Image (tube, rainbow over all chains, first blue to last red; front, side):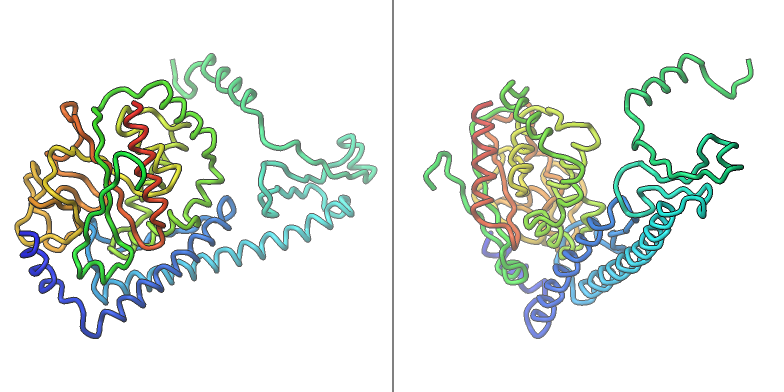
Length: 176
Length: 214
């Protein structure tokens, strides 16, 4: 039975001929594009959302024909192109913000109230640089400006406390 | 092989072997029955959880073996961002659940072996299998045992001498699933191009040893 099935399958698939090297080449290209897309997604993680999904995929595994492989290859190439563009745009945005941050640190009085977050310059974490007047209104009148660096992400303990307070206060926005 | 039980190598339909060089199937049969995992297995899952971080999950798809499975998924028409490869699914579950949850044997044994090696493994009821396993595509009218629907012609399946037993990287037929009554478990590894033979053997050995130890 096994031998019979093998024979049937070979004739059914219509493999071989001149298309086999083309399919092999397309599979190689898919592998290369997948590697490139994976690297771009990892590079952009947390900075820019990159969609790696390829439309038109099949729910069941099967041998794809030349046209289907081309479609997968083209879709992947498109995803790679989009990812490169998104990363390039994000990189120039971050570069501009780094320049702004340099100016902010050098002369906070010329960047009043400007706030640059770590995410804006492509750094992990929740911190930010904020140009603020020393001693509030007095500093504003006197031109005493400084850069305040926030201490980073809120601690889980503090967030939990806020959650507990919220629960204790009961549901909001409900009229009794 | 030098260890017991020795893994068996299945065959791949020749036209598929020529389309997908490196595609292979190997399995090992173990006397074991499903049930709660021992404390040692659950401790190992906790240790694995401690070693699996979000940053590692992001970089996972760049590692050679997970990448090889992603590429193969693309090549057979599956989208690995919708239908996850086994290692990626487990890693996502780990991040979602905050740890690798114990789901009993043989699931825990497979989790340990897949996360450690990256190799795609699955478990089948060994007593329901007839002869050698293979990877082939389906003929018209073929079904998965116990499932009412017909499998579309040309679907890639894992089959035994009697017929298809599971979709490749998909669900198994009802008769081949590991159930409470199962007494012998077949741990099946699917190898694709880019996955070294040594990793396949290591994955099978690890899963079999965990199953035997309970």
